[in-house]
Image (cartoon, rainbow, N blue to C red):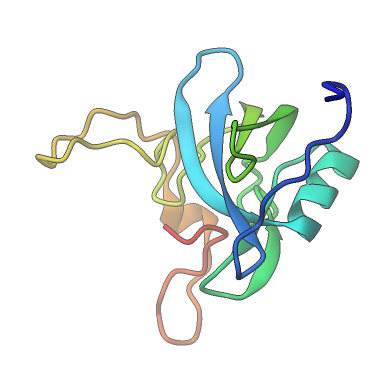
Length: 137
């Protein structure tokens, strides 16, 4: 086994794998999203996190709307090659609700995270009055 060869990522039947974004400096888990082969390729080419929106059925670059980009320091693959870990430098908040992390509350509903921006000031409303965001949140 060549430990220096690219790992063959095991995409699911929909051509996706989950990817956890983790702050490379603090270790905080910021978000979970899905990645297609194209999103992974774009991430590796640009050094900025790209994901695949299942709800919108399209590729998206984190921060393209909000300006809260994720610069990817390293992409890791789990032992089964079916989950990715993006070690990132997060600029601003990772969560479309305005929090630094999507994991900002406990199961009991207690808010334990920090709100770092106002989503109403960042995202436009679409024709139905619903927030147009870059995440599936």
